[in-house]
Image (cartoon, rainbow, N blue to C red; front, top):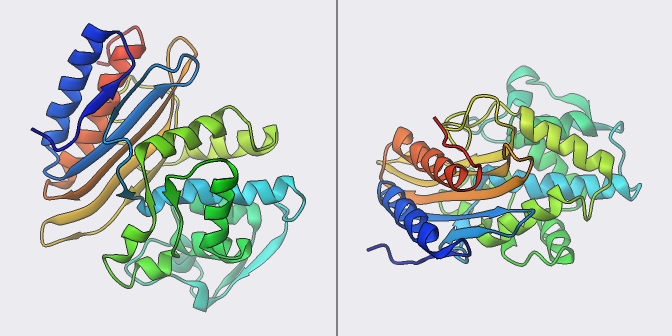
Length: 291
């Protein structure tokens, strides 16, 4: 038995089947799995360890992007403003940063370009420069609290996460709070229509994680999502994540967060856990089976 329960608000007999399916999928992760899925328009929901704390890795770039765009909406920042990226802004050589790799002497980029590098390419340098522009990670957490999102904490930079494997645990989220944030974002409650549309487009066009949430869904399914991944040391991987909003055939929207933590499974198996969970909830609420 897994050390946590599956909770559901779907019809009883079908929810039992879905819960059993998700438990079976989670066992293959050989680690901790937390997930929550909610149909935004109806409130139908299912979750596994919804209040657990899971290291976000680059998933935290989604709330950072929202915080940046709130500042744009308030006129404190501008998408067109130029920001200098210096060599001392670069994350470590083992961390992902196309900006660093293509501009080894530094570069000047617009806020909009940095936002796209961070949220679409998952560039660590872009993330840290935007965190600095916001005044530090604590200000992102403060922004989340202003949205009544209490189960997500942004505490460190990408560069700091590169110094030790355990630092990443300081940036954590619960599946329930992440789905709540996805819902707030989708409903356009706290960002302007233009900012919401921009970030949705960036998250939909991202090339990362094709075998996670999107992996087993029908071709052409719209998924606006953000992945997060840690490195693997001695067969142990601390974070393999994907969170996002899936558009169902009905036009309704499924907010889904899946976190796989502290896993001994292979890369393919961890990603397959996320893909299988997405397929299971899609099959439940789409009205058609994913092939």
